[in-house]
Amino acid sequence: MRTALVTGAARGIGLATTKLFLEEGWQVAMIDRDAEALAGAVTPLDNVHGVHCDVSEPAAVRAMVTEVLETFGRIDAVINNAGVADFGPIEETTFERWRTVMATNLDGVFLVSQATIPALKETKGAIVNIASISGLRASTLRVAYGTSKAGVIQLTLQQAAELGEYGIRANAVAPGPVRTKLAMAVHSKEIVAAYHDALPLNRYGSEREIAEAIVFLASDRASFITGQCLAADGGFEGTGIGLPALRV
Image (cartoon, rainbow, N blue to C red; front, side, top):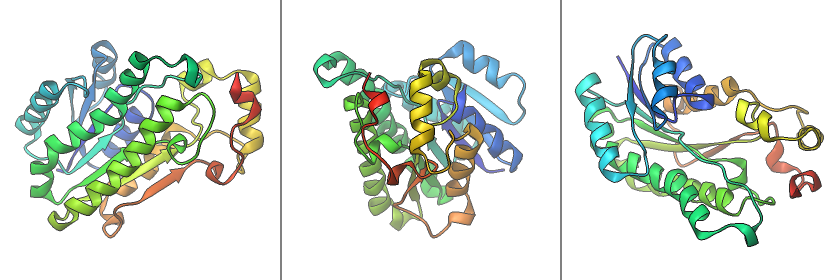
């Protein structure tokens, strides 16, 4: 049975991706640093194994990969979904806030990918990194977040260029506005209305819709696709930058 390793799997896009992999007959290593949320997510599911891990910690990542391989024996796909969001003006972004975002969003992707390369060589597997539309186009209040996600996209290109000779594919998915609990909690009515006006599809995406893009890129259906960044964003990449409602 094929094995997917999904970081940030306890909720949101990571949990939706886990469930879709299970529907398609995979087994899933669910990775998250929130032990309580992870335990709650793992309990009702079959063919999963939860590992508590902070992906920004090199030693923790190495131990996590060892545990996954001891449990499942193989890794066919790595989904680097774990991330943190911190929005604020450039002038108010401290270096500590900057580093907190980079440690998980960029360092974590590098560390998990690097630690799983030997296993992916064995299976000619796939890496799917979760970037963001904020990594493809500028917006306000996203100096750390947007820069980290732009770095993820470039890292994906580096992985594709260097690992292709081993049969390992590397792609990224760049979600636009997604109707997660977190987004709905922090997006004001004005922001929601602005996004709806700016999105050609006039709505937020769902966690399941992003999961569909991720699982596709991890599957054999995408066997000749590597080094790509797929914007699953309702057309947002092609529309306005710096919406006024997002400046406050």
